Image (tube, one colour):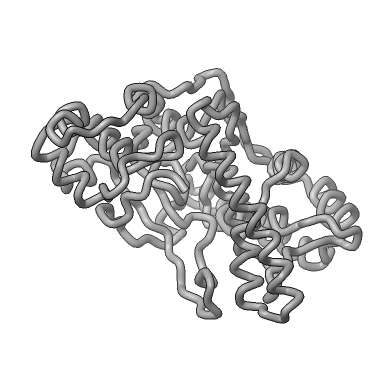
Length: 340
């Protein structure tokens, strides 16, 4: 989930068309989890092919990435590498929660309680190495670049944005701001109607653009203090201090200036906070990558989606035709601009 500062941060609503011509580094794991979570049957069952293999991640990746490409957006997918050791406890807790949710899902399904089954199935979502490998192959077939981060994908995407290699980092989490991304785009790949957790209601989800400098000015914090706020309330790398949420944490930091002073003034102990702070301020990132875009490979896409996973050929071909039409229209627009 990342650090929860949603109560303090307000993004600017955007349309996908507003990002035309922008290169955006997308947190791949975060995005694939979103697809696996929301692309499901009413009883919580994910999409599967005829052999029972889950395909929700491929469906979301193909159709929603195509949606971005049609609007002239240049996505780059950044995958997680080796997680920091401090994330081990979070990963183990998530695994425990998924196991309990899986058992509860099966019980609800047997009892015919579809609403509960759906909500438990969402919590039980698991992204496997095989799914990640399939996703990378599909991204390549779409002609798009991807890279493995040395550690956290959000850290690498944020680094690329800070370096100016990409315009923004895209993720549902706010960690990108703590990692220093000048611009964070939320809801980029989940735009449209979306079902609310534990409810049959749906809402319209729109992209949000969040600028780090505006957040810091609004909260009257430095980036270092923003990181301290995250460490104080809890991140993927530490639990934080019970009873201190975003608003209280912000108040304490404004009163005392930095985390050490807050802990001293309140007589609190937060073991290892220096290491957590370093993960955000001195993340493990790399400049050893090359971003290249190519034309989509229709045959490779049909082989992966239609032949291997039983996607409807006519639907896949319809998307490929739209993408081809979009490229031709933009090429003609470029010629018109030069009077050719």
